Amino acid sequence: MLNIIKGAHVPDAALLCEAYTIGRQVRGLTAIHANVGADKLLSLFTAFIRAHRKELLFFILEIPCNQDEEQEIGNTKTKGTHKNIYYIDGLSEEEAYAILREKGELLVHDGISAFGFGGHDSQDELTKSRYNCCTAFTQDIPAFAKLLEGQGIFRTEHLVTAWDTFSQEQPGCCMTYSVDGELIYDLVSYFKDWGIYLAEQRED
Image 1 (cartoon, one colour):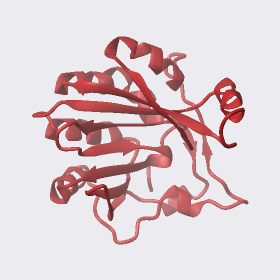
Image 2: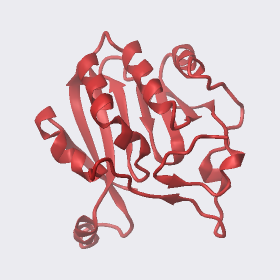
Image 3: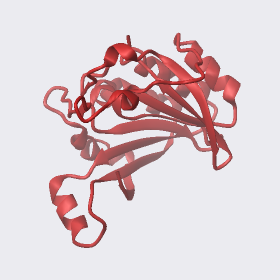
């Protein structure tokens, strides 16, 4: 059974297992989708960073807009929920490790946000979103397969994610998660000195 992050509830979690599948090409990169247990997420991202140590990296953080932002957006844009997409560019290998070391527990277990890392030169990217779902984009499928299989996560032709198990009667639930009173929203100010910036605001 998939080890679910602390900020999520999946009624039929017993239906889920760790696995990955090869998806479509997007902008010349192949998408790889995976279920990754909460206990393996940090080691997977550490392995990704190590594999891209020869290039500068970027960090991605996606956070839902708060209530005040949604009210302001509602006056000018389409209704619905939105999210803010933040980046930190030009990270060294050690700086990327430091993000995981200092804020990894919050990033992994928060249920409402998404985060990831990518390579400036290779354009490889790995992100974790809701319900333990990870997505990679790469031109080097064998290298990414090696990363996942190194964590004991193997290929399947049909990946069942948490989203596939939800119904009106049994929906999933995502929640904020705190570490020593710190929430995911606090990371924007925490990373201010790292050069974090708002890249775009997108409909969720």
